[in-house]
Length: 214
Image 1 (cartoon, rainbow, N blue to C red):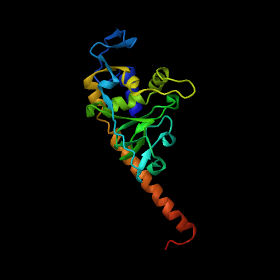
Image 2 (tube, rainbow, N blue to C red):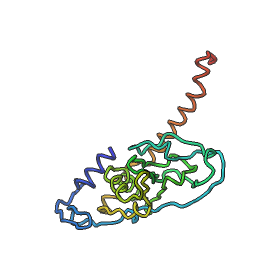
Image 3 (cartoon, rainbow, N blue to C red):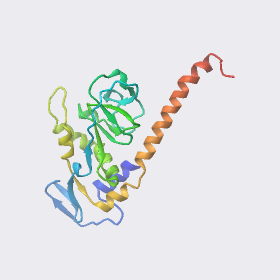
Image 4 (tube, rainbow, N blue to C red):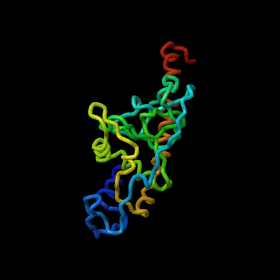
């Protein structure tokens, strides 16, 4: 539903009380409503820098457990498997895979823990900007942009600065209305429930198979 609304409101500009007076914008090379402006992604979010290489047993996200084209991150790794290049992960922050952006890895931090340095972590500058930033960064056209500005051929890497330089149309009222959708809350809650059910399955299934459940 969020994807559908995003495309209707921010790509086709068919939002509530839409202004159909479109004008050509040279920065975006497309027509946008005349009461919209152009901003950088960096006006909505910023990169979180919190290096911490303490080897403790806690959940973490690295590229190996991030699915392609899915903002819901249900699988976790363990920080004890990594000794360097770790950062603090804050539940709900936006995560973006910096290596080989054509793999389309972007999602929501499912819990507090650690995140690998190869995964950028972003936080909204204003809470009203969260949904717009998240959905923009998870679109195919954004991954195409990330690949275009990446460095390297065999293992292209995109910089956080280039990601934050991405230009996009902006209307504060429409962005604020879009943020009424509880995307972060719903996905984080779903992921917690999924992990709990998986934990119970791993504990109870062997007992059931061995007929040890009374």
